[in-house]
Length: 445
Image 1 (tube, rainbow, N blue to C red):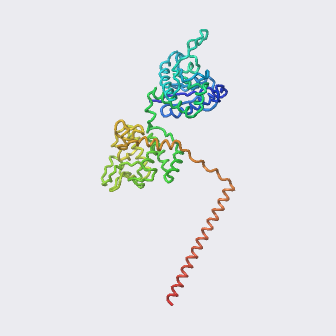
Image 2: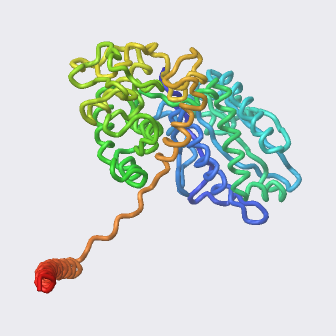
Image 3: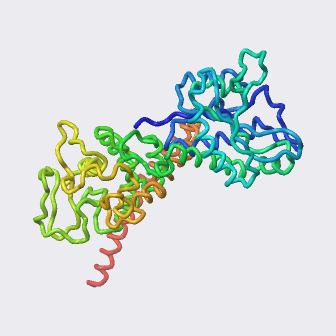
């Protein structure tokens, strides 16, 4: 199923910064902050675009045009309200009759109800309801159509959120706090997920797909966590792409299974088994069946826990294949030899999501780990999420020619001192031999 596209439109900005509260709140800045907080809350489920991501001028009519050009499913314009200092509460406007007639009225109203409800619950502000506003001047060529241009011109359902009155001193004080703006963002996200019945999907992470982390990011992260194992990043990225498996997911699972490659459990580093394949808690008797896996590259050994792979690349590919077995019912890609000795024991396609790799969380009751309580969620929470926010420390600035020459001179001096030390050690050894010979002669006398 294709993902829905949403445009977030932070109102005003750039030259349009006149809307302010009595003690300095600026609407253009406040709603931009809300939109920037909202975007990452939606991106697991929706494709999200912003009409602006900085303080810049976006003409009113261009805002709907941006959404139309992108062919989105929903436009959300985010504002805060102004009236008298006594006005209070939250309200949400939705499409009724735009330039495409009433085509989007029902869906926009439906979405507005969910968003409004969550906003009121989260903020505790007065519920001013969901509304439409129509041009009522009969001499206007737009008579009877939506008043707000961003709604009227949108070729999709559109809503305008008025998230409190910045003209009200109490609500302005709330809007000036990051905590309150975060509450607004989270409430909008929750309302949208409920409206589109995507609230559960947000917590699920596909195993098949493109990596979210970059190869370079993974290298830096693993260099910090397991410096001797950084070479595995290229193996996971190169091999996973052949199976359409997300390499960052596979790498994070390997980090969980091996304790960042410290191998503190029953599987040992020399086995090249990075995900515990065949490690059931009982040692092999040497006759464990390979179930179709290549005997030239995979084996079991008596008194050893789990499968043994001929080299690291084979171990990584077997891991990728086993994830492939859970994520899809497809055959292995053409020309691929079976390397996972447990591939044919998997209920194919039973875990499309990382969170379902633990049997306890899998609706079908099967999984990579048994009982596997929190197993898949832990891969995402404790490994993937931390990888995704990891920023490598900056590289040291390049050396200038003078510094390079100084280092060479110092290295030459160190080499000379090492040679002199070796000579001195040789002379000391000869001296000790001479002393020992003299002592032996003295004893004979």
